[in-house]
Structure formats: structure tokens, C-alpha cells
Length: 166
Image (cartoon, rainbow, N blue to C red; front, top):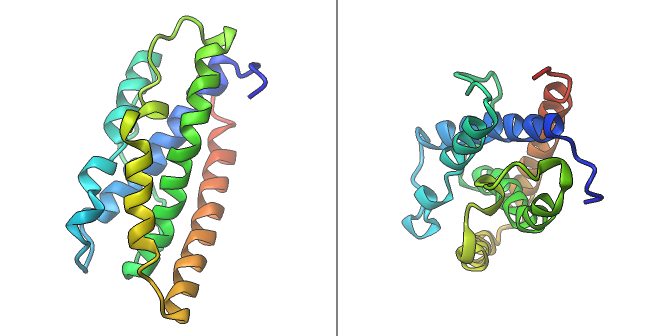
């Protein structure tokens, strides 16, 4: 937010987000339970936007990751999705700052941080509408636990990948 993010630091952010999103999207593609079509999961995929950013930055796209998110049921899935959708919401604020960062002035596009464009508000509302349908206290606790675990997983991934060299 201070405008001091370097190009190398930005590359690490894109790589970290790419690994995490690609892994999550791969997991949700083979769930043992059905998800409501109204969640619009195909429109929530961010890997393509991240690959575009990685390509612009000259970053090699990783093949696989050993990360596993806790998505054994619908409530747990929604907890993980909460973390990813929340970061997309925050990404809109980050996007504005990236465009003003003098260290990134050579970059014209920030695909990931603007991935929903004008649909950001409606995508968040649709997600929240589904999240609030979880009313049973134990299922709410399961979604919260899954979100907390996801925050830990992403923190560890960002910490590990921040040490990578580009």
C-alpha cells in the first residue's frame, strides 16, 4: 500500500497466488459432493488471470503443488472459498495501488488483481448469500475451522515462496 513493492516482490505474490489458486481449483474440480450452480464456480476461477500475469512477468508456471485444502464437505469448501473470495475483494484495493506503484510502472496489466472487474460486488454478494445459508451451529463451526486452516496454509505458502529467487 506504501508504493514500495518491488518487481521481484510482485513476482513472488503472483507465483504464490498462482500456486494456491491452481491447487484449490484443481481440488474443487473433483469434489465428492455437488456444489450449487448458482455459486458460479467457473467464473470464480483465477488461474487463467494468474497465468497471464506470470507470463507477462516471465515466471514459469508451476505444474503441481503438495498443498491440500480442507474441503471434505460443502461447509469446509465454503470456508476455503471464503478466504479466496475475500482476497479477491481486497484485490480490488490492491489493484489501485499497484497501478500507482512506480516500481511496477512498466506493467500495463494486473489481471489477477482485477479479475472480476465490474462484477466484483455481485460475485461477493452471491458468495455471501450461499455462505449465510449454512445455519446449523456445528456446520458453521466447520466452515470457520476450514477458513482458519486455509489462512494458515496460505500464510505458510506465502512465507515459503517469499524466499524464492527470480
